[in-house]
Amino acid sequence: MFSGRSPFVLVVEDDPMIRMGLVDALEEAGFRVIEAATGAAGLYALEKDEDLTALLTDIEMPGTPDGLGLAQIVHERCPEAAVIVMSGRIRPGVGMLPPNARFFDKPYLHDEVVAALQGLLEVK
Image (cartoon, rainbow, N blue to C red; front, side, top):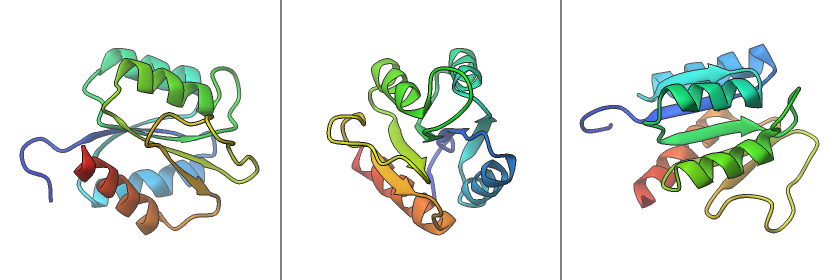
């Protein structure tokens, strides 16, 4: 699907089963994926590899930043990166997400998230 190097996606989700399923779906779609269980671990991964194409993050996670804070940090550092934010309990209000970010309620279908990510990356 992708020409050249596969897009690099950072998945930040504290639930290991949800994270594993999402990572598997993204890898099957041709993405290079790195995963983290907390916002702090996600920031560490970002520091190590700034070739970030996209962020997929849960909102509620232990520690800081939460997913909304992480989405804003990624947008500031990598404004071209696609951002998808997910939650089963919190629905972000107007202005809480970076520009052009997408939100998904949990539970979601992996295929829908992958398709949304592919669409965000085609626009860029």
